[in-house]
Length: 447
Image (cartoon, rainbow, N blue to C red; front, side):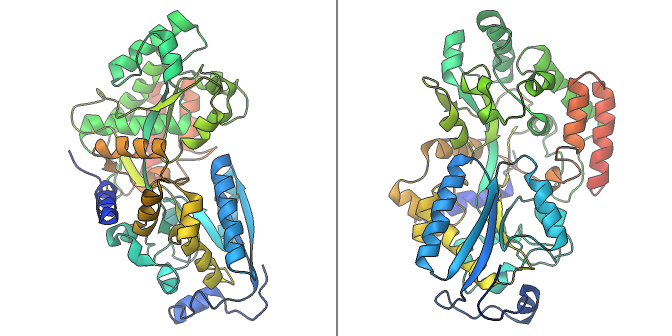
């Protein structure tokens, strides 16, 4: 099996670790970047206000706000205005800001946003220009290379490498008299058991539209031996193979493994971790990033236990059914009037002992060797995050193309949502859905 680039990078990181307004005039960031590397030290900064935005759950919000407060105490004179929220509609709002030049000074971005919103290299600052402030030596050079824009500029600092895994409500599975599933056959059997022993409103797993496409990609790469979008950006599967993937998801619905999207919509406009059916154990499985279990564990009802699963065996015999990618990055917008101070905050969050300790593993197992070492020695790496990350890396994951998350594919009105909705609601056959999905991929991929 092929090990993904990021899996190899994380192995080397762990091994290495084990061994608004400013009081003085400031030149526009783009001009400063073009001129030279920032020569000011962290002890030299202007009294100013910078903006910082991120998305996440309540535990991430609380930790990040605490870190921002500590930063402002450490560097009096720098005021940080924050903007944070849940993922729903977050990308749409940020995209408009990037396009209009009104984005925050420091911004949390997805891996795919480099190609989506910085295709010309004019949205995010080349962080090499702030290398006197941001300690880039703490990052594997191969990993940093993957975070460059089309001009070879370092568009963002990778916070972690992440992959999807399963989390199971062990309490509900025990109630049904079965163990948590480790294979596709066991998962399919669990659907029947849940319906018979617990009732029609209990399901072993819940999958939204994007979750479904991710699982389809895992299923198809296990069938074909390569990721559905390769390193060169080419689609590696046919329309017929995409239909096979949609049929696979339909089989999960038909066997009472997952609720229909109509059923999920009937639960109200809430994220899964806030859905009462998840909280009380009616939805007993989550397919989520290894960096994100905290928000589920925090909301789980009393007496419920969420455990980490592993690679779901039996998806195919050609390769692993797991992928990994850069989870998210911190970037500085080129329109920032205070890139030096924004870089100070960035470095504080990813490399400074105080900032790193406050944030913990809220954004996953850190890619920074310094951060990993700090958290490891302090026992601050969340045990569930660590177990989930180990489950992903033990599966020998394939690398995940950022094109998979292209804005034309992923989003509330993009291809994944509209196609999986249409198929689940019975408005399209899997054959029609596969045709639409193939066409959507061909608009994005480089075939």
